[in-house]
Length: 318
Image (tube, rainbow, N blue to C red; front, top):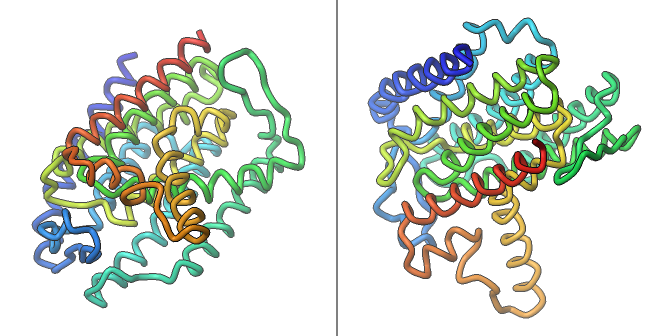
C-alpha cells in the first residue's frame, strides 16, 4: 500500500511541476487553441495554451520508469500504444497551431492511424494468449479466441474517439479519466493480484498524473490537453483494459465516454434522416451546457457517475 500511495504522489507532483513549466512555455510558443465558431460559450477561451497533455503523459512515463514498470512486457506495450496515439494527437495539434485554425489532420488520416495501431493491439493480445476477458456483475469470463483481434481493435478505436469527444469542457475528460484509472487500478489488483500488478500501477500513475494536471485544467482552464492528451488518454484507457483482461469493464466504468460517443452518433443519424436534432448540441456535455449548467457542475456530474459506476463494479467483484 505504501508503494501505491508513493506512486500516486510522485506522478501527481511531477505532473503538476511539468504542467507549471509548460503553461508559460506554450504561451511563448503561441500554442493557443483555436475555438470553433459555433461553440458560442467558448469564444473567450480562444488562445488558451493547448497540447498540455504532453506534460501529464511525460510525467506518467517518467514515473513508470522510476518505479521499474519497464521490466513488465505487457505494461511496456500498454505504454507504447498510449504513446502511439499521443503522437498522432501531437501531430494534429501541431498542424492546428501552425495553420492558426481548428483543423489539423483530416478525419480519415486520424482514423487510418487509429485502426492500424488498434489492429496491432488486437494481434498482440491474440498472439500472447490474452484472449480471456472478465464480464462485469458476476464471476464470469469470455474467451474470444481469434475474435480477440477485431474485438480489441474495435475497443481501441471506439475508446480513443470517445475520450477525444469527452474533452470539450474544462476539466471534463481529465476528471472522468482520473476516476476511471483509479477504479481500474483497484479492479486489476482484485482480479489479477500480483500477476498483473504493473498494469494496476500504470493506472495509478495515470490517475496521479491527471490529478496534477487538473490543478491547471479545472474551470477556468489555464491549459488544454489538446488531441495530444485526449487521444493519448484513449490509448491508455483501451490498453490497460485489454491487456489486463478487463475489456468489458471499459464501457461500464467509462460510461460517460460512451455517452459522449453515442450522443454524437445519434445526433448525426437523426439529423440526416429528419433534419432535426435530438440534443441542443452534441456531444452530450454541450447539450447540458446549452441547458445552462456550468462547466464545473457538468464535470462534477460526469465524475460522480463514473465513480458510482466503478464502485458498482467493485461491489460485484468483491
